[in-house]
Length: 608
Image (cartoon, rainbow, N blue to C red; front, side, top):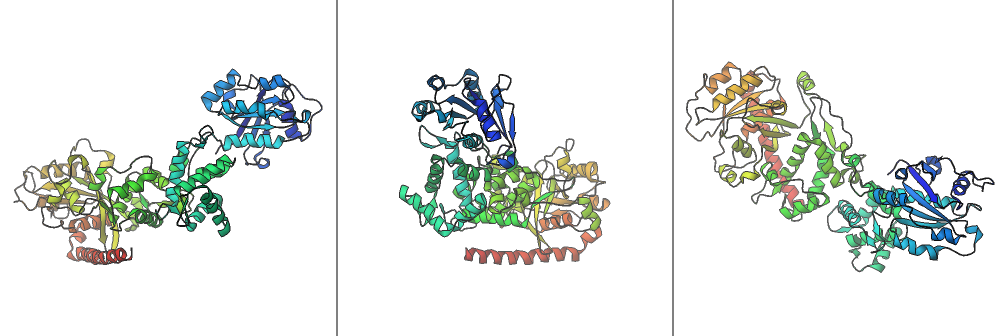
């Protein structure tokens, strides 16, 4: 909403423009009226809308485009004055270019016993920019306060964006905005706002719930005017839109505008930048994660749209979920980034993983997405920034030898064709046969899922780095752990890994793990000065880990647990990492919680 309002009074000479301003300020009719009043500023605390208001008497010096509303003043006792009520050329230009609302003001009503409305009505019907017409008297102070209230209202709660008087229906942009608001407020996605949802909506927008009788009265108004406005004792979308049409038609624009602005809309019915991108300070070497309340909210959104209760979102369910967005935010590559079911639909775990990925890689986009879903409104938070946890500096984690982070990034390096993509897809439970079904244009350079380390659920984000060691960006090198992948059946494959390690990670504190991919094929001697095993020994790295995704079932997840553990404990020495006891504790923890998680999944599925 605007921070102030500028009202400009224009009209023929002697119609009482200056008198209107003087009467408002002094609350009495001035005996002597100057040729033109100076600009008047009314403080916010004495205006009905609590907004500072500047009132300007017309002058060629004052730029018309600075006006937020123009009052065209005429004298009701002067026929020539009424006949000349039209748009002067500068006003026409201002209205056309800046969509400035207009108010017709019939002054000197104390001098006549009749109304000028019959004469003025055709003019109002001719110009949709005219918000209203007010007859008043500067002499006896009739409707003076009302005049400037309507002028304020025309700026703060304009009719134009909401309603078309000629068609007697709401504008398409208004219908679109209110439809999104309805869907966000429909917490169970049944197409009806029940009493609980209506009360939450009322409390969110107007800070007070509706009494049971008032709620019933509202529904009765809809019932009397529409056949399908109320269903199962709840308000349908048609009923919701009808109510707002009724508010507008009865001059209660402020009700609809209050709702729109609470849900983030500006005067053009676009979501504001302040709403979509609230301030969030992220210091260097810190990452961003979703907090517990954010995951609960996202879980409720998933449940709301998982109509068949199969713990996966079909294409239609996913489309319905994103219907409150102005565009489809997830492309087909998402299905190659997270876990899916046998039909290729994103699972509950995959859904949360994609949100985790977005938060980690592009927190501003995550804030935008949460804004579309109405996070701050449904959770009654100041903004969706309340959903984000900014982790502490990684250097502090190293010093304290512990971390509270839940998301760890692993950059995967390797020569072209060494098996990096297969390694990423193996993390999502896809063997070589499943991977062959992924279209080339649907492939992703990311894979994210959960692992368990010492019984703690953590997200591991794998990022495939393009094989160009001469042009690696800062983002390519910034990660929690490095995975160097080579093809055991290609003699030239390991040389790339050795070169990347020596050039970028030899003196780095980032832990590294060498992985021999395609381990189902016969291993050949690598044409490198040192074999992979000798290379790891020389640089005090963990011995190369063999991996294959050419399996009958899902590939083994042990190596991903190992990567997560190394990322969580970068301070642990390589000697400790080689200890069988260390890995036994991590593996047992992962196994126990995987079994426990499956049991919980079955229990929740039965409950749903």
